[in-house]
Image (cartoon, rainbow, N blue to C red; front, side, top):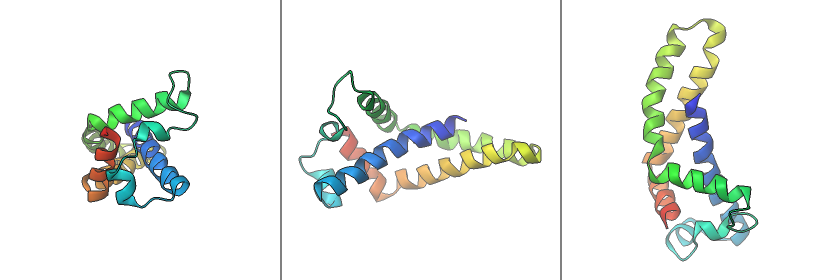
Length: 121
């Protein structure tokens, strides 16, 4: 399901945010609004030979293009599929819908806006 992949990309940014806060010992405002560029916080440095860089760049593109909106649209289709499918085919669409709803709730909150500003930096 596409929504699970989109949720994974959003999770990459949230994990980078959490690890950076713990590692640097900074508060939310200090990390998101001051001089801490997320590219400088990628594990093992920002290099094209580093797989974490490619993962971060994909997540950054997803965040900047507001990919969570596409996930929310796809969630409606997954919900319909989950409600009309057989019992054993309902778990994955319901999980994908739940992930999309959680990502949407985070993205539309004040925290999500701060994370978007931080990633765009």
